[in-house]
Length: 99
Image (cartoon, rainbow, N blue to C red; front, side, top):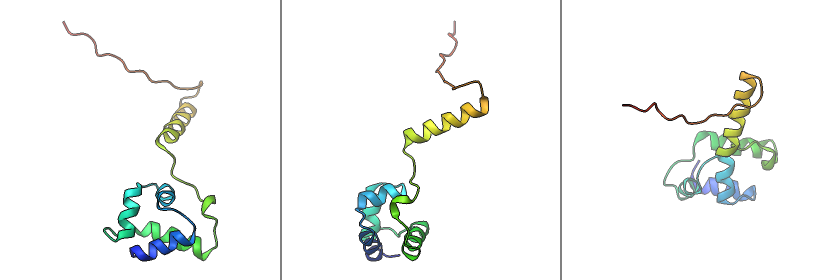
């Protein structure tokens, strides 16, 4: 997929470059490089755009990549389930003092 095709695809979905970056879990600068043709649009991005168009999917119904804070919360919830007995908290311990 070339930059021009990518631009037409996201414009057809009424997405800004920033919204496309959020959708694909990348930086806006990366999307700008896709648009300009500096780097190739990755196959998974092309595939998602094709599937959305081919199957008339609502782009806003697609799962998005969680933010770092959301992922950390999800990881902690998962770890709490594994360990059981409620939430897990981690603290930094100081190394033992050396004499």
